[in-house]
Length: 292
Image 1: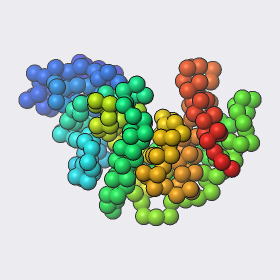
Image 2: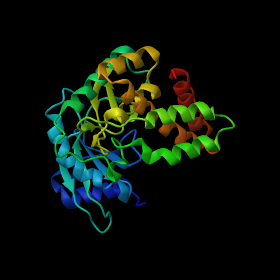
Image 3: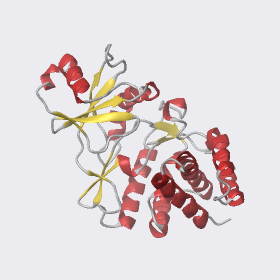
């Protein structure tokens, strides 16, 4: 992994965008795993892939975000310029418009039920945009929007390795229920990583959605996984209703939430108890929520 810091970003800006070389560069408060993000002055951000696997995200966002923005009520990330590779930093990178807002938490929203309506409405808008020619789910976006079967072995292994504490039989039934159906309609747009870190809140309400790096078209079920990772029972039902998801699509959405919780728990059970506990809570909620 390359060292991506303020000094590197300053050199890239000076070399490729000298008109902005006098602007202050500083790390953002919460930077993601796939990319490193920095403030560029007060109105822009610089976003650099942290590894080669995330490089396809740059071109994809540059191409599709201006198109998607036209069909959405809420602000989303807006590319302003694309940086080119150098000897020091070998990949393309982006300069985006800065969006104001706090990273979503349970503490900074006024009404969880209303937030569920607002997020569901945003995703419904996204899914309604013409997806013709959009990037089909695949390796470029870690199969978000594709078939859950890609992660079948990984999920079953996680259940098997932790069956001393997990309900092995029930979790396998829930997982198999998620695999029992496929998306049979036309491909729809999916954000791919609908999670608190990619959602901004202002004055207690949803105000923007960012980080479309694993954008794609396919099955929208993956974008509803937050139903079990953030919402309570009442807001989860509202979220489902606004999304107008049928039972099979909801089963697949639950499968996406379960897969992520399983692999996170399996990877952190002994090394990071705090993260493991959060994942176990999600697994237990999924078990409690299911009606078989």
